[in-house]
Image (cartoon, rainbow, N blue to C red; front, side, top):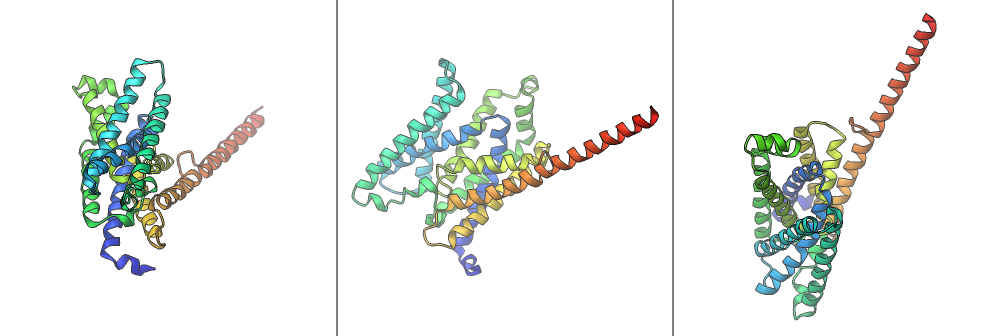
Length: 303
């Protein structure tokens, strides 16, 4: 079992999914506080047509080119969501659902066409649906690592600006911080995280890696800084452990195992988290009830 970790390829893949998990956990905190968790799901599905079109144009599975195609497609999806929301009576969540369905449907249609061409079923593009980290070559891993590290650095260096942007936009305007610029940067790191993760986790499940760690972290702290740290830890551990488990079997998809591990962390957080966790709430309820009983007894004695 441990011999799997002796492989340099496995070590590289584990490192990349761990860094991806850290980046996704941190970016997921931004989406959580912007109340746009569904946006990550919509843009992940919107990225699929871009992957297939990039492959069709070049007839080559170069991860960097596929990522660029995915990013263009996802950004188009984000633009259309904003356009629909601003020019019609359709609400943001409805617009997200529409774009998610239309783009993903188009992606599946294009994927079917590619798989019917000569050698198309050997392209490995099916891995972008559920994710398969084991299918990545070293150049793919390096590309993924570099982009994930850039996302982490952007979030780390701009921590104060992100905090002001999320929690006090009026103050941000007052000190000259560009809200439009921050919106562009937010969309950029969100799309980058999504497109670098779709081969490892898949377009269907990458949103879960963005959402679950941040929601889990919320059960442990009320501090934005500690929420980022805890979410990054949960995301990184989910990526590494899930990838290791998927490597134990032949052809096991990586994405579902990463999400299942993240689900275990969420369950633990839901039950034992010190901020509104089930056990914490129960203990607090018992303490408050005891205090009320003692107060009532004290009042009865005085009466």
